[in-house]
Length: 144
Image 1 (cartoon, rainbow, N blue to C red):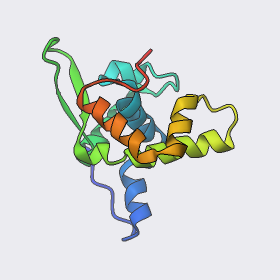
Image 2 (image 1 turned 180 degrees about the horizontal axis):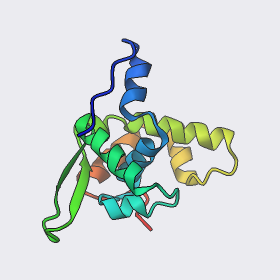
Image 3 (image 1 turned 45 degrees about the horizontal axis):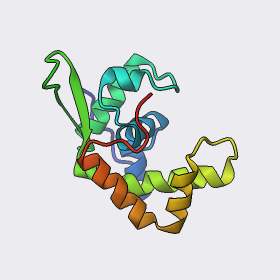
């Protein structure tokens, strides 16, 4: 089991960075929030090419932080599925802002136009649609 990192300060940004602030954790959250991915293999096959040891470590960190949970897949007993907790779903606005910022400042960012348009027009409505999709297990951008 991973040792809990020592708290650097009482700064809320430092706390957030210690909890989910590395690139791999954010990409796992992206996959859970937007792509409907839920298994180790699906995360491993993401285009960014995460190493197996890093993936296992980040999943453990996110689980320990209460952002995700893991459970046995009811259809394949040997498979573990990961899902977001309410604490994890509460990170949705943060990821939406990162997406909109990237779309604004990087013309090569592959952001669906409707997401950018809806996000700029009515963020609350967009987040409600995504939250509703998560509850119904409908991905905004289904896994490839």
